[in-house]
Image 1: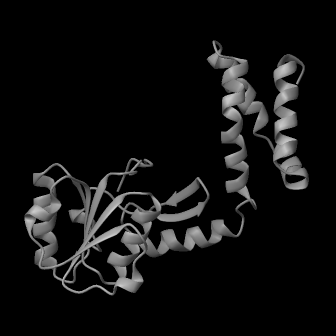
Image 2 (image 1 turned 120 degrees about the vertical axis):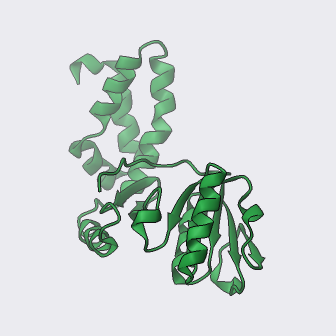
Length: 210
């Protein structure tokens, strides 16, 4: 199935997970890492399995529990209930994922590799989650070390670039592209963030000669 890959900003947005089995709890953790406002609905939940910032309602599912949701994830072990949850979610304009039933999903949860703000998401269009997980493991073996930290350094320097070139968006883009290179990354590994900052300042002083 052809899908359109996106990275959702879920900070502060409500995501409702119905069902607290292994799948549901895994979904809760991923949403919590994305700083979503998470509501977990289940008849029984082991609180020690949850992280901070997760609201729990230990009660039978009701449609009104979805009010205000951006995402809804139906993860119960009852197919008919999951279908009803999906219909209720679409009725309020929320996007829905039904565990293990690709045909009832508006989106698929990718297999994710995360290092800081660097996120690699691998999907198979819902056809083979096992394949996506296998690819994630293979890619993990080759992920550049400390790449999340490197990304954080680059992000911290964007303000310097904007200040130096306030009216030149093309120039800002060019400098940042020059900064992201194998050489810069190796200098970062060797000498830390200062090496990247020093290189940026050299670019800003005379980018035409870099």
